[in-house]
Image 1 (cartoon, rainbow, N blue to C red):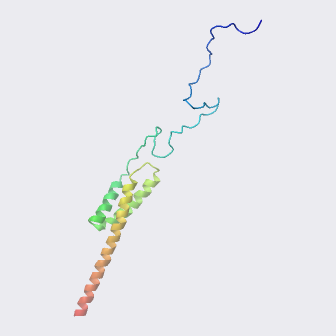
Image 2: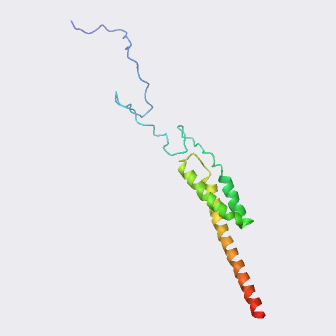
Length: 142
């Protein structure tokens, strides 16, 4: 006779069965690491679920923007402060590695500070030229 067991209901195996892989996916060979999750983003500013996580704005981002706007529109004496402070805050945001946001606000305030400072310089040079012309006109008429 043969050494085969008699036909009948079979006993379930005692080893745990791993869950079935998703449709179309091949399970990794036994004993190896599974491949990394292709849906997990590697870009900063995204969480493990792939949902964007916005960094809080730098505490002085709005200040630089306001100084730039006021330095251009109302009082050009504020424009150099927007330029200097904007440069410093941009460096801090870049050095933070994504911990701070608001770089676009700072960039706008920085550029407005440069433009306002240029207008301030043109105004000061024009004022001194006006004084020189008035002094020359008064001296020549006497």
